[in-house]
Image (cartoon, rainbow, N blue to C red; front, side, top):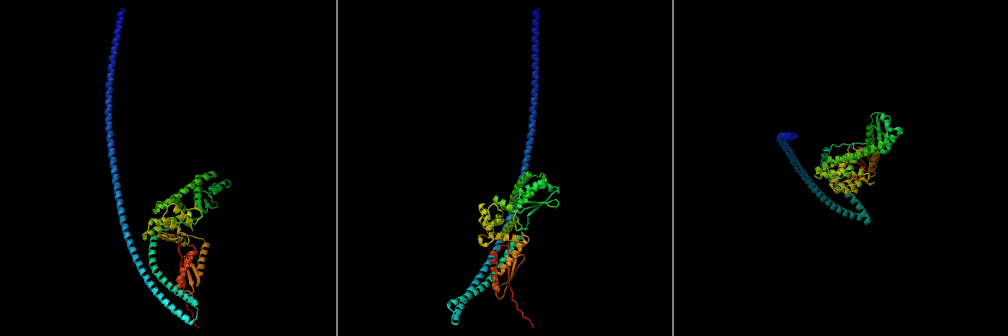
Length: 522
């Protein structure tokens, strides 16, 4: 009985095991089929998404290609317009060149004509000299027969007569040649200068030794002064300027002869007022930062000036010195503005004369560069300027234009017409009405010096400096100085003024000779 139960239990166990195994196999196959179906669905979805992405990328690529094509076409149109503009500009330049060639041809014809007239006058002078020699020989024979003078005494008398006659003849010839040459030269020079002036909007900037700063309220004055004046003392010691605080409402005055220090102080005080924290430690920090900012501003001003003039290749040290000129004045005229004006005028005149425009602008811009080179010794500014130009690779003609700023012309030999243009442009810039200012004492002293130099010549009765010293009128004794000698006196007086005085622009010298016949009816 037990055996039967055991066999039945074993058979039941085996049957259960087989049932479970069959059931598990069916469940596994069902899951496998389901997983396969899911995988196939995923693959199908992935393929569909891939196709969608592919289409999107193709559309993006086509759009990018279209945009690039549009951009290239626009660039091509712009290039074509630029080429057309350049061709038109080239055509205009060719027309200008033809016009300048015509002008030069006319000038050459005028020079040839003047040369012919000069040769004729030389022949006439030679004939006069031959006649003079004959008269001298005849006079010597008469003197020997009549006067009984020694040979040496007769020679002295004859030499004096010859010199006087030659001087009179030379004065007359010089006056005629000068009148003819000046008639042509003045007309052409005026055309060149007027054209340059018309193309330049000349202005001047007059600086002072003080800067006025507006305050938000009067309470700020007390904060600037600080407890027992410690803030204002720290500010003055750090900046090197004087702060003037008076009863003027909401106003502080910064006084200093150094415009760079004054600018640093002004910017520093503006920052302190805006920030509100005013104490000695903060003052030193702000002043240091303002010093760096002003240095950057000076360099940027120099770069901007160079860009405005269309120049390039100027050394950074020269650019820095140009920027410093903005904060310097010369007889009250802003130095950077003056240098820029000289460069523009010189460039325009060079264009009219067919000279190197860039070189003329460069020389004009750098002609006063030595005036701001405080770290290069105590030599004259023009010598410092020449050394800087040599050091930083500037052209020899630029160096010559800088050297020609010497107060006496004999100190520098002019080796280029660019130098003459720069001197002329400098004279125009500094001699305009309002371009410079000078003190009353210096003005009176200069007027007196002009009149005294004129009175030092023999035959001068009186002299008058008029038009703020730009014209000198000289009254001479008619019995001592004739018409020909009057021209020689004007030449000698001009030479002496150049040698003994320093003046801006030019001084017109007018010699007046008047003869009056007076009688009385009784």
